[in-house]
Structures are given as C-alpha cells and as structure tokens.
Image 1 (cartoon, rainbow, N blue to C red):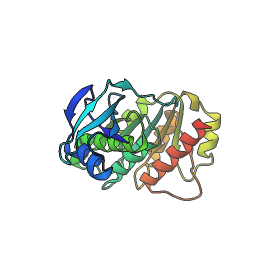
Image 2: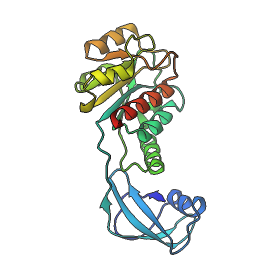
Image 3: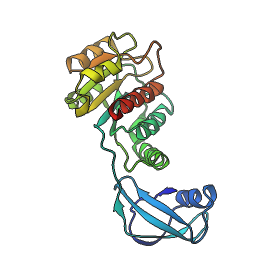
Image 4: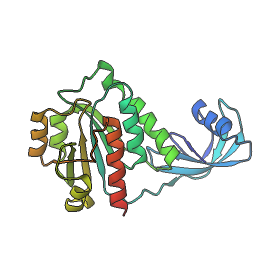
Amino acid sequence: MRVVVPGLRAGECSLDETASRHLVRVHRLKSGEHFVGVDPEAGLQADGTVLSAHVRSARVRFEAARPQLTPRLPPVSLLQALGKGDKGDQVVRAATALGATRVVFLISERSVPKPADGERAPRWIAIAKDAARQCHRPDIPDIGGPVPLADALDASTKGCRVLLDPGAEVSLLSALAHGAATQGVTVLIGPEGGLSEAEVQSAIASGFLPVRLGPFVLRTELAASVALGAILAFVEK
C-alpha cells in the first residue's frame, strides 16, 4: 500500500493525521509492517516500516528515497472552463487518474467565477495528491488558473489541439489519428452553457479543431473524464 508523505526522506518521522489514519485505520497496519511512502510533487518513493501505529501520529521509518518511474506518455493538457460547485474538484481527480500532465482552469464569457475560485489551488493540489496515491501515479499534474480563455489559447501552440463541440463533424479519435498526438494533446472544454460563438472562433483561429465525443451532450466534468479516457486509450494502443 502507498501513503502520501510530503518532503519524503530517509529516516524516522511522524506522519500527519491524514496519512496516519489512512495507514492505521483504513489499511490496519501494525508495528513492524511495511508500506511505500510517496511524494508525488517530488516524484519520489521509499520503502517504509511502521514503528508505532498511532491513528493520529504514526511513527515510521523510511529507507533511502528513489525516483518513481513515470509512464512514457505524450503530454496531455486540459483547458477547463470553471464550473459550479465542486466540478473543479471532480475534474482534478479525473485528470490525475487519467494521465493529464497539465490542468488549466479558464474564465470564459459564460462561466461564473467566484472570488474564492482564485484560492482553490491548495485544495486542488491536495485532491491531486490523493488521486495520485489511489491510482499509483508517481506525480501530479501542473494545476493553474483560473486565467482568461484568451491567455490559455495564446499559450497552447503545439501538438494536437481540440475543442469539444457536440455538433462537430469530426470525432475526437479521428482528430487524434490525423493530428500530432504523439507531440502532445490539448483539449478545451467550455462551461455549462458552452463557449460563446466568438470564443469558439477564437479557439479555431488559434489552431483548435472542433471535435465531438459522441451523440450526446455531456456535463462539463463528465466530458473531461470521457475525453481524457479516450486520449489515454489512444496513446496507449
């Protein structure tokens, strides 16, 4: 089993309450038993041994830390317009588990950003760390924003660039097959009300190709999961 340990290094230490609870209460490890500590931000892991199984502050010992092996996948960036409620949390969780290397939240004409949206980065990073632990991913995606859509378009200039549009004539898989997917993929997803026509045209002018995922209109957070899953399946074939 794996436990996230920020600042992982060799030697003895006490785990924080979240890690201790996961180790002792969820997985029921006892003194003398072994696990793996991981630091997704640093890309490190180390073999650990439980010294004292306290549910709030477990004492453990780590061997020398070593780099985690990162799967050799093309970089995948997700440009996601801000959604309501906890949709951003769901997107980060899915993006981490499905191999996205970068998640940038956007402010578009039809998104309704709140003052707190600019302060969500620590929460999103914590969610990404937990998702990385659960799926045994050795790192976490870079998470940025919220930024204006125009800024994100200006920064996206390489690889296969697609814009999700349920009315598009070209499918996502077709675009991946005929685009520069091996150089990386950037997928743009609008908010609940979709991107405005002016924003769509701006994205197209920046090199994004409108593509469809299927015959149905999907919620923004679900569209992110479906698109990233399709991209992962395509590059892994």
